[in-house]
Length: 275
Image 1 (cartoon, rainbow, N blue to C red):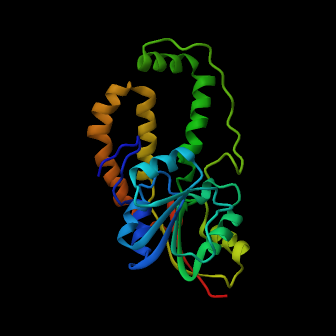
Image 2 (image 1 turned 90 degrees about the vertical axis):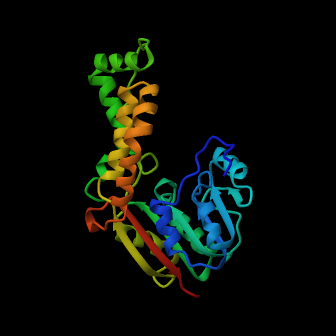
Image 3 (image 1 turned 30 degrees about the vertical axis):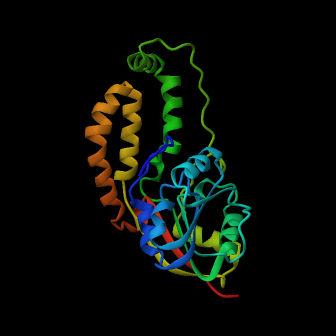
């Protein structure tokens, strides 16, 4: 496939593969709620006659429309979408709910768009053993710590990577709130949010899997370390070509191992019950 936009086409893997396996074949309408640039949505043309992607980021939607012109993409927040009631037979919301402002309203909207008897697959980070290592939360704090307490070492690393001495450094301690942190959920916490949105009789749990332990987040952190310690040329030659691909394959294998309450990821499949 030609890829004219600056975002990569990705194979079907991880959370999107989970959603793909749980999505019934031969359906008419599928929605990827939080589709980014459509790299996951495109695979669902094998399952659904019509595939729609929704995302609030204009750059992602613009890239998706260029890369996957046979799909429909909608620019919208998940809390309030322009899509009709009961329109989709299957919806996937893959690692999106942890980013939204109002989870309850988003679940209410997802179920509004879902046809009675249709399925909703939700994947999101799980509050397991290594949740504290989440790069979205740990890296800003590590950067703050290095700037404030390891200033000279930080400057040496900056010079090594960019061959110039940095100017005066400032630091601001990260403040983690509902809106600024990358959230993790336990199974019951997700079900409580869904029940607030549609009531205890509005849904039925079909599948639940808690999987992956450390390798996924470990590879992400290793990539961050490479970005801090090495110039871009070294990252491309050593990291991108030699080191990261086999580690990412190991992380993919790890994703499919169920670790129960220790897991880093959770996936829930729900069915919308008739009114």
